[in-house]
Amino acid sequence: MTRPWEQIALFDLHEPAPPAPAPEPGDDATEIAPEETAPAEPASAEPTTTAAAANLLNASATEPAATPPAPVWEALPAGEEADGHALIVTADGTYTPSGRELTGSVDSVEKLDKLIRWAALTPLGAPAQIWVVGQAACELLGWIIDPGSEDDVDDMEALRNRAAQELTAVLHATLTPLLNAGWELRGEPGHVVHLSRSIGNFTSMVDVVIEPYVWTYWNKDFGWHNRVGDMGILGSPTAGTYLPDDDLSAARELGRRLAWCAKHLGVLPGPTPARTGAALVDKIKRERTRSGKGIVVTAPGSVPPLDGPPRGDLEPAVGWTRVPESDDLDNAHRLVSIDQRAAYLASAGMLEFGYGQPTHLTGDAAATAAVGEKGAPFGLWRITLPPGQTLSLPEKLPLPHPHMLADQPVQTWVTTVSLDGLCSPVADGGIGADRGDLDITEAWVYPQQGRALDKWAKILREARKAAVDTEDDATKRFLGTCYKGYIGRMVNPDMWTAKQMQHHHQPLWRASIIAHCRWRGRRVAMRIAREHGRWPVRTVTDSWVYLLAGGEDIADASEALGKMSVEKDVVLTDTLLSAFTSAQDVHEVNLAIKAAFADNEDAAGDEEEGED
Image (cartoon, helix red, strand yellow):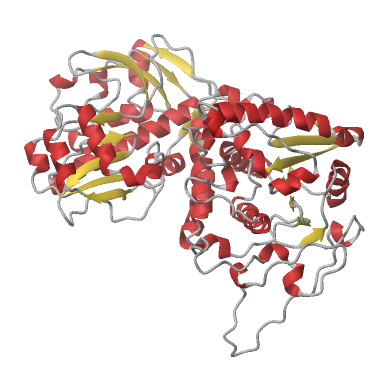
């Protein structure tokens, strides 16, 4: 199959050089890693004459001896899976994601239009993509902004907002040649310029992603805590997974990640991690619709009208700290936090979710539905939580449900996951209640249920394993932001305003996932107490902090997702141990924990959901 760039002459089109000869049998030579190649030559209008020059993205300048070695993932090969779906533009030229040089510089918006139409890229779970990498490439297109520096503002959010407004104004002023050529803007232009062009009944869509300005997009997926956090497929500057500083090296690494995403997820990365997760769900939905096999959810699952709903989340994550007692400090030499490995992903793949129009039940009908032959169906249940102090519960754990109070009953709504958890034995983290003990007075029950996210979770799980096996922390972190971002946005209808995306609004699915992670963590805490006699001093969502002796291991032996792994492990100095010994309230305990884990500040940002 021929490629478009092999058929049509474009501006400064380069002919690819032949591949380097394979090593003879018996040679010790292997494929040349990027950092071992010769320095890249500048792009020119003449055909290249050497293999190294023909593949500029796979070449990088020799680093000085004092420079730290490049991350492992930057030496991984770039596949061809994203070729034909995406292009990368630098100041030196344009490239396929696999690293093949196509044309010279794109030094005007007119040439950008010519490039897009000539390339004839096709979508892959998302519109085709043109990635503009490096400030120099932006300057050639006239896309220059100067919002100032973070020293000029009180916080990064103010700088981001100023930069975003300036970028939109610059794009409106420079995109006229594209609009005159028949392209239309889908929404306001910003770090992504969404273009569409209709010819008859066919509409072509292309997203132009401006890499230097991705940080200007407001989205909590990007971690705004006065710092720039994860920026989707581009990585995280604070975690050390962002693209290299050199434009050609950055282009090569971006191409590798695009190909990786196409290979392991079957889609191009979306403009945010959450949109990438949604694109994968939609890909599976299309496949199941065509085959007629598997669960297909086509409508939103909004929260039904509830009488007396709780404030905030239906199933909030738990946050709890206690002051350690003398037996907790006995022979304590380490402070260790454990968390569930990819907790949300594990729960998403194993839970049965409800869909369709729910039925409202009251009185005996609601109570009867909760004790069906196959257990309680997916739904919401209005129950009465008994006062915690009336139950025989461990004193060194938080109450079993975040809505529960110690001294009075609480009437509230819970998901089926929590209903099952409360009825579990105390030894397994529940309260040992019969369903009749919970005084079920009302319910919303869904007519259909099943493991709607099982294939989605399987694809992400296998992709995660591939990243772990190759020490590709950049794509591993990206996957974490994808599934956490998607599950987090299930609760927000404003995220899915387009009619064709409204089925992603599933707040009860998200509530069930959070509840499942919470109950699983509580069950593990009970197991640790039985086996080690140790109780946590703090928990946030699915992370638990313990004071332990030297060499004491409380993590799960299994490598499966959802199992407990060590997140942080520090030796307690005399000063830190004294801080725990003298702590008078939970605030002082939290300060001591923060001081102990001070060198793990980036990991603290992942406490929302375990990722190791």
